[in-house]
Length: 68
Image 1 (tube, helix red, strand yellow):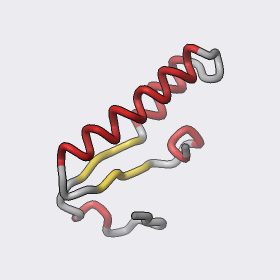
Image 2 (cartoon, rainbow, N blue to C red):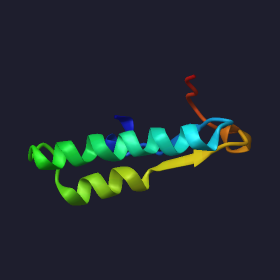
Image 3 (cartoon, helix red, strand yellow):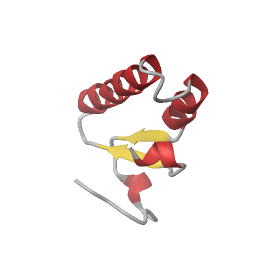
Image 4 (cartoon, helix red, strand yellow):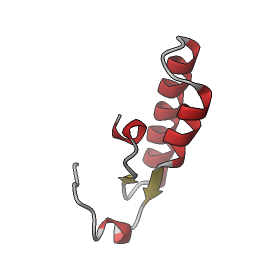
C-alpha cells in the first residue's frame, strides 16, 4: 500500500459507510502484517496516519494521482 511508502492517501467515496468499511479493512491488513512481524507497530500506525478520508470530494483537488 502506497501509504506505507510515505505517501499521503485520500480515500474518497460519497458513502461514509463505505469509507468506514474500507478503512477498517486497511486496519485489519496492517494488523495482520504486524502479527506476522512483516511490519513494525509504529510503521503500521504511521501508515494509518497517512490515510485520510473524504465523502464530499473537495479534498481531491490538487491530488497527483486519482483512482476509482
